[in-house]
Length: 261
Image (cartoon, rainbow, N blue to C red; front, side):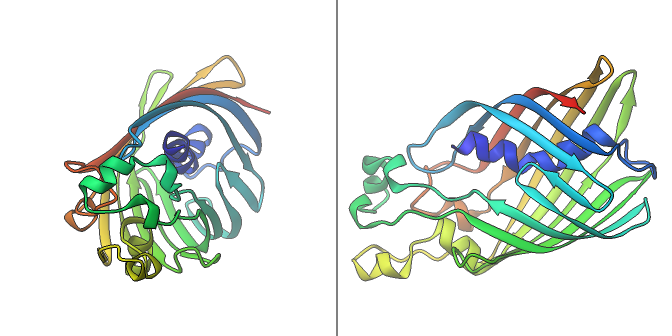
């Protein structure tokens, strides 16, 4: 599950990578469908590495867009600047049964007293500036389903490099998770504490990331896509008893091919 989550989280950026070289030109309209293989190493106790085949999809319209698990409406689009209303699925949830009961016990938690963490749906506002300097994207997203009742601020910079037929896209980013969001997915819940589970509340957390993507056309309508990302988990998250001891980040990668209609 975590591998699929990692891919879907990356899809908005890679969908953009397929459609634009970060100049002021508008991306091509229409659908893009494909398949990819994703791999991710979950930091949660006992989940380990997962490798999964997953579908990829994106849509670019004049106002509406869909990029994997994220979509929205361009409220303002000048070509070099976009202001968007956004919705995005948050697939950070997990089933306690998927974690290692013995590993949790080693961290001082009784799996029988723990609850699953639900996925959520976020909504918010995003802005992106694109040009020869690259692409700078900022967004604020808040949970609208009541799963975590938290919010997240994000900032990402991507630079494009043309090398023959290849488009190379190194990137850096940072996300600030609110206390409610971080506590829900990395801490112990009030209901669990009431059952005797030790309280752990990491509070707000800042998660930096680095990434690299590459695309290359294969014929007129096919495009190879691939990339990797590494999210650096701060101490307040790595100290969580839900995580493997020694986990300090989340690496993920994928490769695949997409067809543009």
